[in-house]
Length: 181
Image (tube, rainbow, N blue to C red):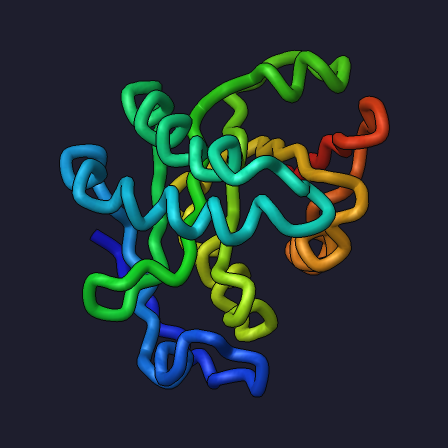
């Protein structure tokens, strides 16, 4: 199991009291340990994906946990959590899949799809997303890598571009596909 540390600092808008003062440990979570983290993943998804630009209804935003569980049985599944004790501050995951490559008209090549990245809103800007991203990709050193995100998710797109991703296709008003070698 791989771990890394990030030290979030509290923001003045924090609604979590001292949560931002604790060290966050970035940890890869094996599929066998996933079940105990699903409620926290649902909570993070519910707090993140109801906000702009996604604006998903709360139950749909929380359903990210069901997607993580379903994907955990697929080849090449990798999940990283930002943890402080048992509290989940964020998560990122992906798996071996070529669907995005095909939808962007690229031939499949044992691709890895970076499926989701979410950090509690009051902890955004503290580099937890960057640490989660890097931990997942380090666990899968051979690309190519693919992801899709909302074109108005400016912070996420900035993080991805900073890490070498480039936009290769736009599909409608709610999806940009990005690629990294």
